[in-house]
Length: 121
Image 1 (tube, rainbow, N blue to C red):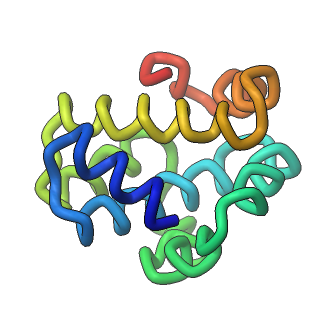
Image 2 (cartoon, rainbow, N blue to C red):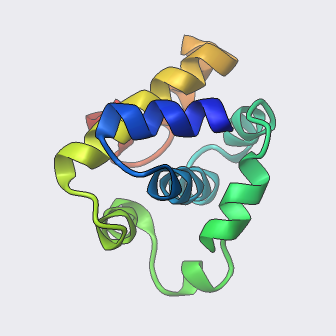
């Protein structure tokens, strides 16, 4: 997880703590909105992923009742102080990391199976 957080922070020019929260929010979003079996395979390949999802408060439950989808994801990330260019940088780097972990085909299935996500890939 430290490797991923470091990569995201450097790529987007953000603080490590913000990068960690961002990872948790995005992975939680993928778990809620994407193809669950494929997303879980990705999460299982990233040590510490479950902990950052839990810490972000984006594991489901109440968050689902308050609305979901790509707009809710963007709102949460902007709430961390990220602008659109930083969100795109983080998303691209996270997807690159995912491709390294589970392969391009499997990561492509997650992106294709999650509504609205292809614009960030």
